[in-house]
Length: 337
Image 1 (cartoon, rainbow, N blue to C red):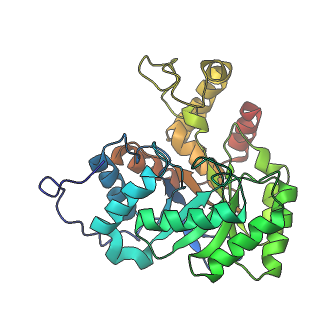
Image 2 (cartoon, rainbow, N blue to C red):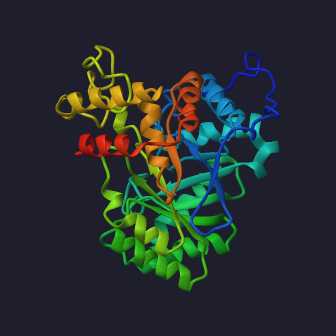
C-alpha cells in the first residue's frame, strides 16, 4: 500500500478544537492521561487495505481528540504492514504533532520464522522494538507492551528486556497484555524493583467477557496501573450488525473473524435485549457497550477499531451518555452471563 503524491489528499492540519470534547482518563497512578476512547490499528491498516481510508480514519481520530494509536509488530496483514503504513501516514500528516501523540506497539506473537521470532525472550523483544521503530520512522514509542506471557521464558528475562528498552530510550513506558492476575502482580513487582514505569495492562473486556473483574482490575489498582480494554464490542456482537441474523457479506458469514456463527447464534436473544436497553437510553448498542466499560474507574481507555471515519465518530458518541441507573446495570449483568 503506497501514497501516490499526485493523488494524495491535501495537506493535513489538525482541527483547532480537537481537545474540546474528548474525555481523558489517568493511567493508574502515572502522569499519563489517555483519551477515553483510543484507536487500534489491528484491522484496516494492513497491506491489503486502502491507504486513503486509513489516512482518513487517523485524521478523523486525531481531530476528535484521540491521541492514542495502538499497534503491534505483527498487525497487518502482512506482518509489519500496519506499522509500515502508520509510518507513511505519520511522516505525511503527524510528524509535527509527535509530542501530542501517545503511540503504542507490542511484541509477543508470531512475527518471523525460526526460534527467535515469537514469545518473550530478550532476543525477540529487543529485535522487535528495533524493527517496529524502523517501520514507523520513530525514535521511540510511548508505551511498549509484552503482548502475551511466555510459559517457557522466565518472567525476569522478559521484564529485564522491557526495562532495558526503556533505559535505551526506545520506549517511555511499558505495558503487558493478556497476563492473568498472578502473572501481572509478579511482572509489576519486578518492574517496580527496576524503577521502570509500568502503566497499562491491555486486556480483552466486554459485556460478554468479564474475566478481568475477578481480580485483575483489583491487582492493577494495587500496583498503580490502568487497564485498556480491547474487543469492547465482542468481535461485533455488541453492535447493530447482527441484530436480525448474519448478513450475507459479513465477516462471520465468510469465516473471516474470530467470531463463529455458533457463538453468535447462542447470544442472539441476549444481544437483542441489550439493544433494547440501549434504545431506551437513546444510544446504539455499540455506544452503550463502550460506555458500560468506562464506568469502571480502573479502565483508562477503551480500544476500538474503525473501518471508516463515520464509524469512529459514531462510537465516540458513547461518551455523551456515561451514566447508568442501577436497574440498567442489573439488567446488563443478567444478560452478560
